Length: 132
Image 1 (cartoon, one colour):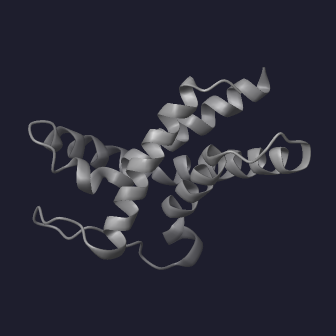
Image 2: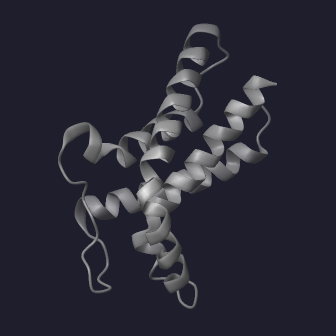
C-alpha cells in the first residue's frame, strides 16, 4: 500500500511540476491559455513544495529500483528532473531561465524547460495508468 501512495505522489508531482514548467507554452493555447496562465500564477509560489515531493519520491524510487529491481523507470528520472528544475533557484541561488514577457515565445533554456514540462506531464499521465 505505501508503494502505491508513493507512486501516486510521483505521478501527481510530475503532472503538477510539468504544468508549472510548461506554462510558458500553455499560455499560448487559444481560448484556455489565459486561464491556465492565471492558475499557474496562483500556484507558482507553491512550486517548491512540488519540487521537494518530486525530488524526494523520485530519488527514493530510483534507489529502490537500483537496489531491488526490476529496473529503473523513466518516471523516476523525470521526477528527479522536475524536482531539480523547480528547486533550481533555491539550490543554486541563481534565477531559473524564464520565458520573455509580453506574450513572446520562449527561446533557448526557457524553451528547453517548457518542453521538459510537457514531457513531465505526459510521463505523469502515463504513470497513472501504468501498473507498478
